Image (cartoon, rainbow, N blue to C red):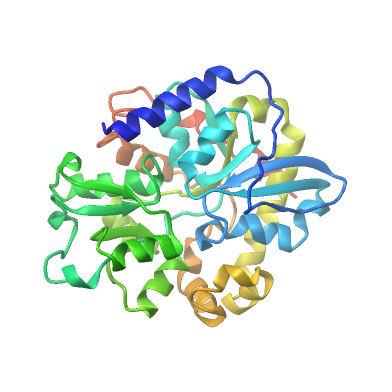
Length: 348
Protein backbone atom coordinates (compact mmCIF):
# COMPACT_ATOMS: atom_id res chain seq x y z
CA UNK A 1 0.00 0.00 0.00
CA UNK A 2 1.38 3.43 -0.92
CA UNK A 3 2.04 6.14 1.66
CA UNK A 4 -0.65 8.29 0.00
CA UNK A 5 -3.16 5.48 0.25
CA UNK A 6 -2.35 4.95 3.95
CA UNK A 7 -2.84 8.65 4.61
CA UNK A 8 -6.20 8.60 2.83
CA UNK A 9 -7.40 5.59 4.81
CA UNK A 10 -6.32 7.25 8.05
CA UNK A 11 -8.19 10.40 7.08
CA UNK A 12 -11.36 8.45 6.27
CA UNK A 13 -11.20 6.62 9.58
CA UNK A 14 -10.66 9.84 11.52
CA UNK A 15 -13.50 11.58 9.72
CA UNK A 16 -15.84 8.66 10.29
CA UNK A 17 -15.21 8.83 14.03
CA UNK A 18 -15.98 12.55 14.01
CA UNK A 19 -19.48 12.17 12.53
CA UNK A 20 -22.13 13.06 15.10
CA UNK A 21 -25.20 13.67 12.98
CA UNK A 22 -26.73 13.65 9.53
CA UNK A 23 -26.85 17.39 8.86
CA UNK A 24 -24.82 18.44 5.84
CA UNK A 25 -22.99 21.71 5.31
CA UNK A 26 -22.39 22.88 1.77
CA UNK A 27 -18.77 23.88 1.28
CA UNK A 28 -17.73 26.94 -0.66
CA UNK A 29 -16.94 25.37 -4.01
CA UNK A 30 -16.53 27.10 -7.36
CA UNK A 31 -18.16 24.07 -8.96
CA UNK A 32 -21.37 24.33 -6.90
CA UNK A 33 -24.73 24.42 -8.66
CA UNK A 34 -28.15 24.59 -7.00
CA UNK A 35 -31.52 23.63 -8.43
CA UNK A 36 -33.09 26.42 -6.37
CA UNK A 37 -36.59 26.56 -5.00
CA UNK A 38 -37.96 26.10 -1.49
CA UNK A 39 -37.81 22.33 -1.44
CA UNK A 40 -36.00 20.01 0.94
CA UNK A 41 -32.27 20.82 0.78
CA UNK A 42 -29.95 18.00 -0.30
CA UNK A 43 -26.24 18.23 -1.08
CA UNK A 44 -24.60 15.78 -3.48
CA UNK A 45 -20.91 15.82 -4.36
CA UNK A 46 -20.05 14.47 -7.80
CA UNK A 47 -16.63 13.18 -8.85
CA UNK A 48 -16.45 15.41 -11.94
CA UNK A 49 -19.73 17.10 -12.88
CA UNK A 50 -18.77 17.79 -16.50
CA UNK A 51 -17.84 14.16 -17.22
CA UNK A 52 -20.37 12.36 -19.36
CA UNK A 53 -20.26 9.37 -17.02
CA UNK A 54 -21.89 11.66 -14.41
CA UNK A 55 -24.30 13.30 -16.84
CA UNK A 56 -27.54 12.35 -15.00
CA UNK A 57 -26.77 14.55 -11.99
CA UNK A 58 -26.62 17.88 -13.83
CA UNK A 59 -29.13 16.81 -16.47
CA UNK A 60 -31.75 16.15 -13.79
CA UNK A 61 -31.22 19.72 -12.61
CA UNK A 62 -31.41 21.21 -16.11
CA UNK A 63 -34.63 19.31 -16.81
CA UNK A 64 -36.21 20.57 -13.59
CA UNK A 65 -36.70 17.11 -12.12
CA UNK A 66 -35.36 18.01 -8.66
CA UNK A 67 -37.83 20.85 -8.26
CA UNK A 68 -40.65 18.64 -9.53
CA UNK A 69 -39.88 16.31 -6.63
CA UNK A 70 -39.88 19.16 -4.10
CA UNK A 71 -36.11 19.13 -3.64
CA UNK A 72 -33.51 21.89 -3.61
CA UNK A 73 -30.44 19.92 -4.68
CA UNK A 74 -26.99 21.45 -4.47
CA UNK A 75 -24.44 19.73 -6.69
CA UNK A 76 -20.82 20.13 -5.67
CA UNK A 77 -18.05 19.36 -8.13
CA UNK A 78 -15.13 17.31 -6.84
CA UNK A 79 -12.28 16.01 -8.97
CA UNK A 80 -12.32 12.48 -7.54
CA UNK A 81 -14.99 10.21 -6.07
CA UNK A 82 -12.65 9.18 -3.29
CA UNK A 83 -12.58 12.75 -1.94
CA UNK A 84 -16.36 12.99 -2.23
CA UNK A 85 -16.69 9.78 -0.23
CA UNK A 86 -14.45 11.20 2.48
CA UNK A 87 -16.64 14.32 2.70
CA UNK A 88 -19.79 12.22 2.99
CA UNK A 89 -18.39 10.00 5.73
CA UNK A 90 -17.49 13.21 7.57
CA UNK A 91 -21.13 14.33 7.37
CA UNK A 92 -20.42 17.35 5.16
CA UNK A 93 -22.67 16.20 2.31
CA UNK A 94 -25.66 13.90 1.94
CA UNK A 95 -24.70 11.76 -1.04
CA UNK A 96 -22.07 11.05 -3.67
CA UNK A 97 -22.28 10.77 -7.41
CA UNK A 98 -19.50 8.27 -7.97
CA UNK A 99 -18.62 4.69 -8.85
CA UNK A 100 -20.47 1.93 -7.05
CA UNK A 101 -17.22 0.10 -6.23
CA UNK A 102 -16.53 2.60 -3.42
CA UNK A 103 -19.37 1.05 -1.40
CA UNK A 104 -17.51 -2.27 -1.53
CA UNK A 105 -14.14 -0.79 -0.66
CA UNK A 106 -15.63 1.15 2.25
CA UNK A 107 -17.38 -1.93 3.64
CA UNK A 108 -13.93 -3.48 3.82
CA UNK A 109 -12.99 -0.52 6.05
CA UNK A 110 -16.02 -1.04 8.28
CA UNK A 111 -18.18 1.72 6.75
CA UNK A 112 -21.72 1.02 5.52
CA UNK A 113 -22.56 2.82 2.26
CA UNK A 114 -25.12 1.80 -0.34
CA UNK A 115 -26.02 2.66 -3.89
CA UNK A 116 -29.69 3.68 -4.24
CA UNK A 117 -29.78 3.97 -8.05
CA UNK A 118 -27.45 2.57 -10.71
CA UNK A 119 -26.75 4.92 -13.63
CA UNK A 120 -24.00 3.21 -15.64
CA UNK A 121 -23.68 -0.48 -16.45
CA UNK A 122 -20.13 -0.07 -17.79
CA UNK A 123 -17.33 2.25 -16.58
CA UNK A 124 -17.09 4.34 -19.75
CA UNK A 125 -13.36 4.61 -19.06
CA UNK A 126 -10.64 4.83 -21.71
CA UNK A 127 -6.89 4.32 -21.25
CA UNK A 128 -5.02 6.95 -23.23
CA UNK A 129 -1.26 6.89 -23.80
CA UNK A 130 0.98 9.68 -25.11
CA UNK A 131 2.03 9.21 -28.72
CA UNK A 132 5.73 9.00 -27.86
CA UNK A 133 5.27 5.55 -26.28
CA UNK A 134 3.14 4.05 -29.06
CA UNK A 135 5.92 1.66 -30.09
CA UNK A 136 6.59 0.71 -26.46
CA UNK A 137 3.19 0.27 -24.81
CA UNK A 138 0.81 -2.07 -26.62
CA UNK A 139 -1.19 -3.30 -23.61
CA UNK A 140 -1.15 -3.11 -19.79
CA UNK A 141 1.45 -5.90 -19.94
CA UNK A 142 3.94 -3.15 -20.86
CA UNK A 143 3.21 -1.01 -17.80
CA UNK A 144 6.07 -2.12 -15.54
CA UNK A 145 7.91 0.96 -14.25
CA UNK A 146 5.57 3.34 -16.06
CA UNK A 147 3.88 6.49 -14.72
CA UNK A 148 0.13 6.00 -15.03
CA UNK A 149 -2.41 8.76 -14.56
CA UNK A 150 -5.53 8.18 -12.45
CA UNK A 151 -8.13 10.63 -11.22
CA UNK A 152 -6.63 10.45 -7.74
CA UNK A 153 -5.10 7.80 -5.51
CA UNK A 154 -7.89 5.68 -4.06
CA UNK A 155 -10.27 6.57 -6.92
CA UNK A 156 -12.11 4.06 -9.09
CA UNK A 157 -9.67 4.73 -11.94
CA UNK A 158 -6.93 3.83 -9.46
CA UNK A 159 -8.77 0.57 -8.65
CA UNK A 160 -9.20 -0.27 -12.33
CA UNK A 161 -5.61 0.62 -13.24
CA UNK A 162 -4.18 -1.64 -10.56
CA UNK A 163 -6.50 -4.48 -11.57
CA UNK A 164 -5.62 -4.21 -15.26
CA UNK A 165 -1.93 -4.24 -14.39
CA UNK A 166 -2.24 -7.37 -12.27
CA UNK A 167 -4.50 -9.10 -14.79
CA UNK A 168 -1.83 -8.57 -17.45
CA UNK A 169 1.01 -9.92 -15.33
CA UNK A 170 2.32 -6.64 -13.95
CA UNK A 171 2.71 -6.27 -10.19
CA UNK A 172 0.76 -3.11 -9.21
CA UNK A 173 3.65 -2.23 -6.89
CA UNK A 174 5.88 -1.74 -9.95
CA UNK A 175 3.71 0.95 -11.55
CA UNK A 176 3.68 4.58 -10.45
CA UNK A 177 0.15 5.94 -10.14
CA UNK A 178 -0.21 9.72 -10.38
CA UNK A 179 -3.34 11.75 -9.62
CA UNK A 180 -4.06 13.92 -12.68
CA UNK A 181 -7.86 14.34 -12.44
CA UNK A 182 -9.29 14.97 -15.94
CA UNK A 183 -9.62 17.58 -18.67
CA UNK A 184 -6.73 19.96 -19.28
CA UNK A 185 -4.83 18.69 -16.23
CA UNK A 186 -4.74 15.14 -17.54
CA UNK A 187 -4.00 16.17 -21.11
CA UNK A 188 -1.18 18.42 -19.92
CA UNK A 189 0.31 15.54 -17.93
CA UNK A 190 0.39 13.44 -21.10
CA UNK A 191 1.77 16.23 -23.27
CA UNK A 192 4.58 17.02 -20.85
CA UNK A 193 5.48 13.38 -20.30
CA UNK A 194 4.54 13.43 -16.60
CA UNK A 195 2.56 10.26 -17.24
CA UNK A 196 2.85 7.69 -20.01
CA UNK A 197 -0.81 6.67 -19.95
CA UNK A 198 -3.92 7.84 -18.11
CA UNK A 199 -7.45 6.59 -17.54
CA UNK A 200 -10.26 9.03 -18.27
CA UNK A 201 -13.70 9.53 -19.81
CA UNK A 202 -15.58 11.80 -22.18
CA UNK A 203 -15.30 14.66 -22.98
CA UNK A 204 -11.58 14.47 -22.07
CA UNK A 205 -11.07 11.54 -24.46
CA UNK A 206 -12.40 13.43 -27.48
CA UNK A 207 -10.43 16.55 -26.56
CA UNK A 208 -7.14 14.66 -26.20
CA UNK A 209 -7.64 12.81 -29.48
CA UNK A 210 -8.62 15.96 -31.37
CA UNK A 211 -5.44 17.66 -30.12
CA UNK A 212 -3.33 14.71 -31.20
CA UNK A 213 -2.10 14.31 -27.64
CA UNK A 214 -2.70 10.59 -27.25
CA UNK A 215 -3.83 7.25 -28.64
CA UNK A 216 -6.31 4.76 -27.19
CA UNK A 217 -4.74 1.76 -25.48
CA UNK A 218 -7.98 0.18 -24.29
CA UNK A 219 -11.62 1.20 -24.23
CA UNK A 220 -14.37 0.28 -21.74
CA UNK A 221 -17.25 2.18 -23.29
CA UNK A 222 -19.16 -0.92 -24.39
CA UNK A 223 -20.45 -3.93 -22.48
CA UNK A 224 -18.43 -6.31 -24.65
CA UNK A 225 -15.17 -4.43 -24.18
CA UNK A 226 -15.78 -4.11 -20.45
CA UNK A 227 -16.39 -7.84 -20.11
CA UNK A 228 -13.19 -8.51 -22.04
CA UNK A 229 -11.14 -6.32 -19.70
CA UNK A 230 -12.89 -6.88 -16.37
CA UNK A 231 -14.57 -10.25 -16.74
CA UNK A 232 -18.20 -9.12 -16.80
CA UNK A 233 -20.65 -6.28 -16.38
CA UNK A 234 -19.18 -3.57 -14.15
CA UNK A 235 -21.77 -1.19 -12.60
CA UNK A 236 -20.15 2.20 -12.31
CA UNK A 237 -21.85 5.56 -11.69
CA UNK A 238 -24.46 5.56 -8.97
CA UNK A 239 -25.86 7.74 -6.23
CA UNK A 240 -24.57 6.25 -3.02
CA UNK A 241 -25.17 7.37 0.54
CA UNK A 242 -24.43 6.20 4.05
CA UNK A 243 -26.83 3.52 5.21
CA UNK A 244 -27.68 5.67 8.23
CA UNK A 245 -28.82 8.51 5.93
CA UNK A 246 -30.86 6.16 3.73
CA UNK A 247 -32.58 4.65 6.77
CA UNK A 248 -33.34 8.02 8.38
CA UNK A 249 -34.38 9.93 5.21
CA UNK A 250 -36.29 7.40 3.05
CA UNK A 251 -38.65 10.10 1.70
CA UNK A 252 -35.78 12.26 0.48
CA UNK A 253 -33.99 9.28 -1.05
CA UNK A 254 -37.16 8.25 -2.86
CA UNK A 255 -37.59 11.71 -4.36
CA UNK A 256 -33.98 11.72 -5.55
CA UNK A 257 -34.35 8.31 -7.12
CA UNK A 258 -37.61 9.37 -8.78
CA UNK A 259 -35.73 12.26 -10.41
CA UNK A 260 -32.87 10.05 -11.61
CA UNK A 261 -35.11 7.30 -12.98
CA UNK A 262 -36.91 9.95 -15.04
CA UNK A 263 -33.54 11.32 -16.18
CA UNK A 264 -32.34 7.88 -17.27
CA UNK A 265 -35.55 7.43 -19.27
CA UNK A 266 -35.03 10.84 -20.88
CA UNK A 267 -31.47 9.88 -21.87
CA UNK A 268 -32.72 6.78 -23.66
CA UNK A 269 -35.19 8.84 -25.69
CA UNK A 270 -32.78 11.58 -26.85
CA UNK A 271 -29.60 11.95 -28.87
CA UNK A 272 -26.30 13.70 -28.28
CA UNK A 273 -27.33 16.98 -29.87
CA UNK A 274 -30.38 17.17 -27.65
CA UNK A 275 -28.30 16.35 -24.59
CA UNK A 276 -25.71 19.00 -25.47
CA UNK A 277 -28.48 21.59 -25.84
CA UNK A 278 -29.42 20.99 -22.20
CA UNK A 279 -25.95 21.23 -20.70
CA UNK A 280 -23.98 24.34 -19.60
CA UNK A 281 -21.71 25.59 -22.39
CA UNK A 282 -18.55 25.07 -20.37
CA UNK A 283 -19.25 21.33 -20.26
CA UNK A 284 -18.27 21.00 -23.92
CA UNK A 285 -15.91 23.97 -24.17
CA UNK A 286 -12.90 21.70 -24.81
CA UNK A 287 -14.02 19.36 -27.59
CA UNK A 288 -16.80 21.61 -28.86
CA UNK A 289 -20.54 21.04 -28.85
CA UNK A 290 -20.62 18.78 -31.92
CA UNK A 291 -17.81 16.57 -30.59
CA UNK A 292 -19.53 16.40 -27.20
CA UNK A 293 -22.75 15.27 -28.88
CA UNK A 294 -20.95 12.69 -31.02
CA UNK A 295 -19.13 11.30 -27.98
CA UNK A 296 -22.47 10.85 -26.22
CA UNK A 297 -24.00 9.08 -29.21
CA UNK A 298 -21.00 6.74 -29.41
CA UNK A 299 -21.23 5.73 -25.75
CA UNK A 300 -24.96 6.00 -25.08
CA UNK A 301 -25.01 2.29 -24.28
CA UNK A 302 -23.15 2.89 -21.00
CA UNK A 303 -26.27 4.38 -19.37
CA UNK A 304 -28.54 2.16 -17.32
CA UNK A 305 -32.04 2.45 -18.83
CA UNK A 306 -33.85 1.40 -15.63
CA UNK A 307 -31.74 2.42 -12.63
CA UNK A 308 -31.83 -1.14 -11.27
CA UNK A 309 -28.53 -2.70 -10.26
CA UNK A 310 -27.53 -5.32 -12.88
CA UNK A 311 -27.67 -8.65 -10.94
CA UNK A 312 -24.38 -9.91 -12.38
CA UNK A 313 -22.60 -6.61 -11.81
CA UNK A 314 -21.72 -6.42 -8.09
CA UNK A 315 -19.83 -9.76 -8.15
CA UNK A 316 -17.65 -8.40 -10.98
CA UNK A 317 -16.83 -5.24 -9.00
CA UNK A 318 -16.02 -7.36 -5.98
CA UNK A 319 -13.78 -9.72 -7.98
CA UNK A 320 -11.84 -6.75 -9.38
CA UNK A 321 -11.24 -5.25 -5.93
CA UNK A 322 -10.41 -8.59 -4.30
CA UNK A 323 -7.70 -9.18 -6.88
CA UNK A 324 -5.42 -6.46 -5.50
CA UNK A 325 -7.09 -4.19 -2.92
CA UNK A 326 -5.88 -4.98 0.63
CA UNK A 327 -8.99 -3.31 2.07
CA UNK A 328 -11.19 -5.90 0.34
CA UNK A 329 -8.97 -8.90 -0.29
CA UNK A 330 -9.76 -11.71 2.16
CA UNK A 331 -12.63 -9.73 3.71
CA UNK A 332 -16.15 -11.10 4.05
CA UNK A 333 -18.04 -8.58 1.91
CA UNK A 334 -21.85 -8.71 1.96
CA UNK A 335 -22.80 -7.36 -1.46
CA UNK A 336 -26.49 -7.20 -0.53
CA UNK A 337 -25.65 -4.35 1.83
CA UNK A 338 -23.79 -2.31 -0.80
CA UNK A 339 -26.89 -1.43 -2.85
CA UNK A 340 -30.66 -1.41 -2.76
CA UNK A 341 -33.21 -1.53 -5.58
CA UNK A 342 -36.26 -0.76 -3.45
CA UNK A 343 -36.32 2.95 -4.28
CA UNK A 344 -36.00 2.35 -8.03
CA UNK A 345 -38.74 -0.26 -7.88
CA UNK A 346 -41.01 2.25 -6.12
CA UNK A 347 -40.15 5.13 -8.48
CA UNK A 348 -42.99 6.65 -10.44
